[in-house]
Length: 385
Ligand code: EPS
Figure 1 (cartoon, rainbow, N blue to C red):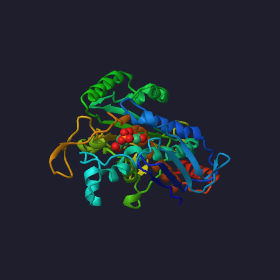
Figure 2 (cartoon, rainbow, N blue to C red):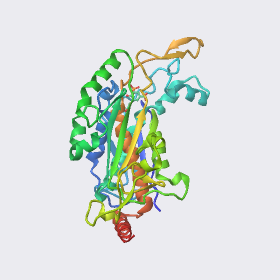
Figure 3 (cartoon, rainbow, N blue to C red):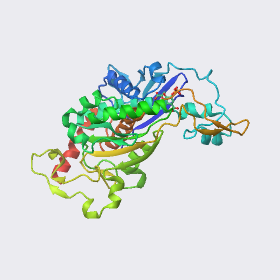
Figure 4 (cartoon, rainbow, N blue to C red):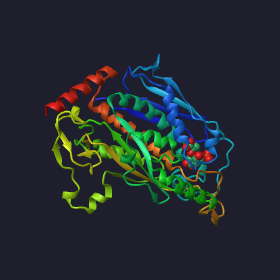
């Protein structure tokens, strides 16, 4: 069983971010421009602040690649920071509510929010997005697409069927959206909400959805709790800064309905119908969001993720000065008004990395050819079931 292991290092205003990926098979042709394209997407979205005008994220591949193909050895990436001012930046005299500042200072026993915030910053997520852009290029040849879109911002929700309504135009519609959404009717209200929050020195949260199409049934495991794909995806999504909720399929709504209106009927799949490569069993609905027993069902994975408003506010939230112990307004330097669109790219990345791990755990191989063989054998067994 191959396990995909990833790590990142780097501070927000340090020299740069480093990312490491181990367990990735040999022989995968990588289009490096696609890594930078995902990095650029993560930098975008309406409501970003001044920092994104400074950075122009580019991933340099340091190892694991020869002649454009992976070697099976660890892949190391470097993303340099343009704003590498960590040694000159002031130490804030008070912790910001909602950020890691205070709990981090309490953990370290130091009156030094900068020691904490530099690593707690969501800047680190650029490294994850770069790694996931590699993972995407492993999954795509197997017909697997992972796609995130923003469904709610500042309490205003897109139409519930926005993904279905977009159909095959989803990538195009999302690329046209300043919020990486699929409901053009929401562009103007969302823009107004962000402008208003900016004027008021406030910030906005929201919800994004990640879908994964083309997953074969049987990825993940019911053998032990931590191996359940639901747990791994949930943990991965909650590892993104500012995430407060994750729901699969019907999510919390499933708890309100009787079982007869929650569970997805198992129905015969007519020969040749979409999904026939995965066998004779289909589902009449997808309330489970593509997961049962901690494994993929063969239906699309559907997960929605709630992001809180970012905690650095121009208006400054109530805090306490470290030295005087007196109430003060939290320090403000600069920040985004909303980063929900960017966060949707990060959510997509986390789902990609977890699905790559689940895919390679089930369909192991040292090389892409071996993985292809394992995939073909799995599909064959599914059709014979
Ligand atoms: C962040 C604060 C801002 C954001 C940053 C996350 O950075 P700065 O303090 O330099 O203005 O721009 O996000 C990124 C740098 C990024 O690449 O997404 C924070 O405090 O978490």
